[in-house]
Length: 189
Image (cartoon, rainbow, N blue to C red; front, side):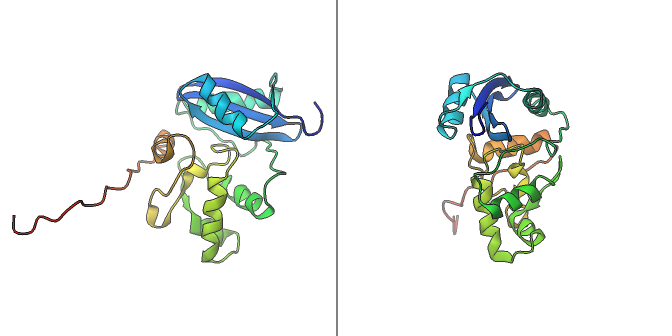
């Protein structure tokens, strides 16, 4: 494999088909579950242009096995998986490193991560942007990062916040989507 060559593999989990892209430096992209293998490939390769199918190395095979266990509800720690984040902004890499410390069944907030990094409350928006652009969702557990007040916040992966709710539920965290806004008041009824 050349220094920047990207390889990928697709695999089935209890939640659907996932995919990984990697280089000689580590995993560079993870695709959360999609209903079909074709959709997982399409989503993965949309952001891994030029990646070629490859045979997983022992480290990649171990990461795949951990992801499969995760989606069966088994407590799984991804903090030791080697990532290739060299294409990410330096501040985003700091945010991702802090996010990787949020363990199974725990949550934090955008603001708490910003504070942990020594940034002011305005940096919570940067944390949110980093989570939205997370190339390896789950391995960098952005689903564990909530909005202020324990609110769900967004989730840009396929399935949106429903996927975030399901992933947190696997870890024993029960959150509900926000209630729809009230359509009308019934005065005098």
